Image 1 (cartoon, rainbow, N blue to C red):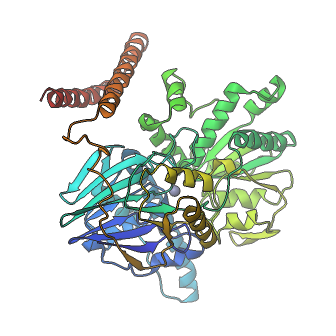
Image 2: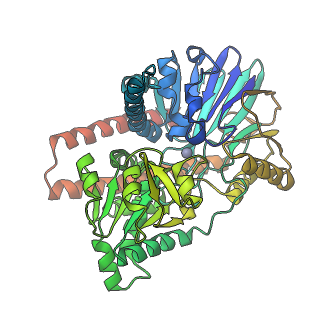
Image 3: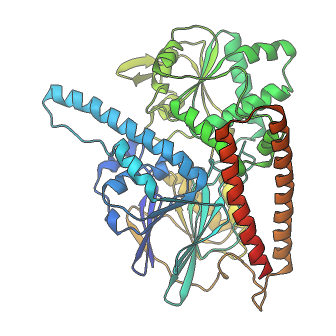
Length: 553
Ligand SMILES: [Zn+2]
């Protein structure tokens, strides 16, 4: 059994690792290289996609999922395991990515034709993206999934973006079982909307990200205040606030935080608050609008606070002055008006999408503010602005950077050094080795030194295309249940957990029943909605009968 590292080893993009066991091949993510590395996407893949049996997809971000349509175009026909929200998000994100590929190729080809150069092909098309969807197999968090007799998987919430997962993999080769944990991207605790990263207690080997392996985030309580202060200061002087944001995840978190702020308004007086409430917030990204819908469809994985909003009948992703632009014309109109406003647009690193237009029209005005709320990879336009460039080239034009540039770090999707170390401290037995990926070199090296000092775990920072042999260490227990009793029965502690789960389900069920009764009594319900409710109820009924049969045995 071995692991081969073929992406996210020189930086943070292009995540892709290959595990070979028996005669099977399992790919962990297949993301797009971005920023300075993006030409790597056009290199020949270092394996034959048709030979891959399974993929485990940690989350929907393009630097983890973006080359899936390329794999399919090149012959992949295996099974892609991921969480349900990851699948829902991939459906819109991979199509969007394909659309960008097609547009950029068309643009490059027009130039090539004029210069008499040969034409190029897009990396993949929207048809390739659509063809890839049939290989996805969504699973639930904490569900034990037997991919085959030698491979068992369990997805756990990583708290990084909706659907993001830390994956436990039990891999059998001959008589030996090895447990490998792939962290994907690990979120920060107490992120809006999402649960904290799941605690994992055992592994032989861990493959782990270290994006912020040598940095500490500012205290996250400050993030909303800082964001709101910059917004208030800017709009009060008549300026526009531009927030380059990942369409998926960060945008919804900012909507959620703004909504929460308008609700609680702890440190604003009434005049400031009513002024702020009248400032339009434009979400200028078709992808962000679609992603917000996906969030609303997957409220089952929201954290307690966000669920409480919903239980009260208050949608935390909607407020009065929030507008989603409908088309490119509306987007352009935003830059013809001088009204103070907030524009949230993607891409988050400013390399593509409508954000480029907004930066072109707003960066040179000193009244305005640009607020970065996410990681800016080396080589991206966002990183150049953040690093203090006085002039930047956008859409072929040189633009002065006169607007105020801020970095509100608390919104990071990634745990910081302490968050990563604390997550590792949950392991009851130390993993034999920790492979550190997904980080710039210094972040990985510093993190490795810290892990070795604090936890005494051997760390490896793999180079591109390095292969490591993996051996069984007889460290981990049976799949799923970490500590079965000697006779194989369920420990009392675990039995109590099951009872607690059932009771909380019962409470949820009663609440939903009441909601349904109230809603049916007060407003007409469409036939389509009735059908959807009925279908879900039929599924529920069948699951409950199965559960009861299993318990009765
Ligand atoms: Zn990510």
